[in-house]
Image 1 (cartoon, rainbow, N blue to C red):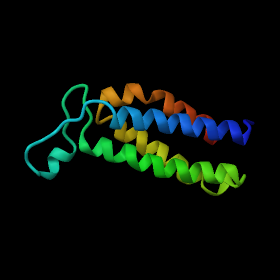
Image 2: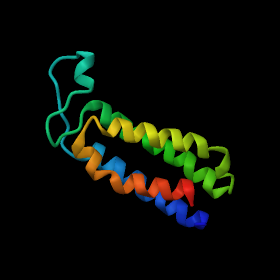
Image 3: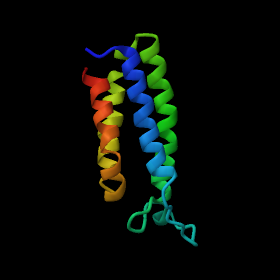
Image 4: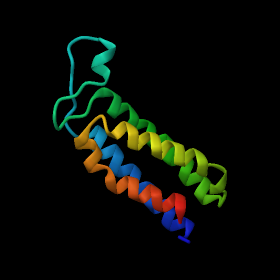
Length: 114
């Protein structure tokens, strides 16, 4: 079993990794407001959907850190598993992002199962 403080550090590091990759790399900018453009990106860039998901991750991480801090993580563990599965599925939309956030997936697995 990992210490909760170590899990908090892993949560912060995984969030930083995801946020940095999705919000501080090149973004695909479209001139039209078509809803499909929300999901389309160029190679090596992040679409607006990816940027949005990276920002949502910050909120989810705050919730995760709070429950780890109060030593009540078991209450949200199943939701974290669902979010991780959705994150892995969504990452298949962009191979550049997928490759770069593999460390975050590993850190989240450590938080969930250890």
